[in-house]
Amino acid sequence: MKKWDLQKQIVESIVCQCRRRLIVMNKIKGSERLYLKIPSYDELAYRQKLLADPDTMNYNAGIDMSYVGYDKKTGCIDFNESKWQNWYDKWIGNTPKRFFAYICRKEDDVFIGDVACHYDEETKENITEILIEAKYRRMGYSEEALRLLMKTAFEGLGLESLVDNIPNDRISAHKVFEKVGFKKKRAVDGVTWFELQKEDVR
Image (cartoon, rainbow, N blue to C red; front, side, top):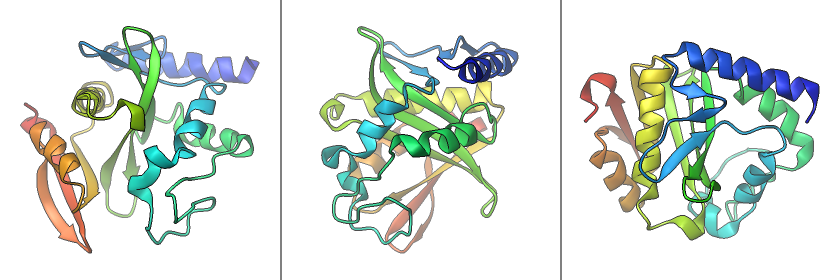
């Protein structure tokens, strides 16, 4: 591991410990089956794998976006190693404006997806992201992972609200967000925006 990478991890760990000690050694206290882990630089290979998997990224297909490396047909995004450093500098160690972690299964420490949230300067909202690898879907992991992200955001990062935008045809995702307390905020161009206030967490 590069010295710079180690220093980044140490700084991230110290920052998070100051946030009510919710995050220690880059691991976030988890649920019954899962925990969150802030990835090291070398572990970005898993994110590369996720974004290149058509079965995992099919929800993202057919969208008009100008994102470099996006494949409209499959929904996949090219995240080759040349892009890792810029992404890592942007996302790791920049809480509370940006937070990213892998979803890990406790029984075997296997990565099964990722969660994130970031502050959008234009909308002035904290936008969430959750991605479960295709082969681990329909196992109830989405709800658990989302609750862990909520706990981290509200108790660890000091945020007051979270939002997410979900296409109207993703009914199962709507149900998960509503189950954990998110409420429909607005609907625009086939997408529903959900919002959760810290005070409404259940």
